[in-house]
Length: 228
Image (cartoon, rainbow, N blue to C red; front, side):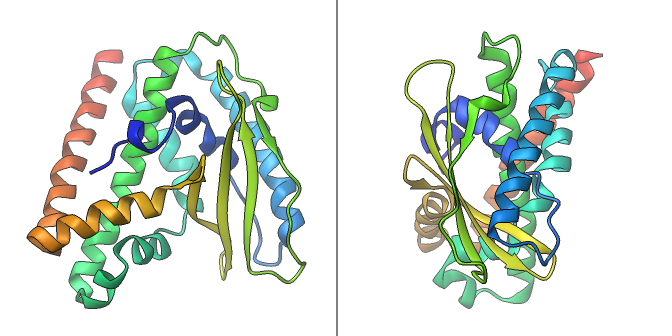
């Protein structure tokens, strides 16, 4: 199974969720999405600067931040369908529910682990909103699917392209995939999961995800206790 280091650069994963705090109404159009993304990024960078000491070395606190700020704005069900592909259609209701739960936990562990490691490694003393630069949205006013393109300026090296793939739902705009340097997070997981399902079946995949998620959670809880 891929981990956050195989999907993209650590600094990018650590910060890209800053663009995901999207309190959009269902009526918001593509241009509104970009405006709110920029505002949300400003707010998140402010929060990171304010709580830097609390977050450093405390994976439980980072996990809580990511769960509160990021997860509500990802369309987990749609992402789960895309990740499983043909295997989604073959799964029964219980398997689908179990997978959605474990995939949600996997994404939470994925982003929180990346952020925790980045905060422990970066030499930055503060985070500036200019680190995340959004490009104008190329979409019609009535489009229900859009791609928000941005670039992250890392601690060193060239800017990293990040594309947020979003669609309009009854609850507003939701993210169903993120591409980093042309690599789709959903597609990467889909390849890995498909191989595992073909070899061992979907129930074994769910059990494997559960074991990994429990280990991530235990590590987060331990770091939280040690931070006190």
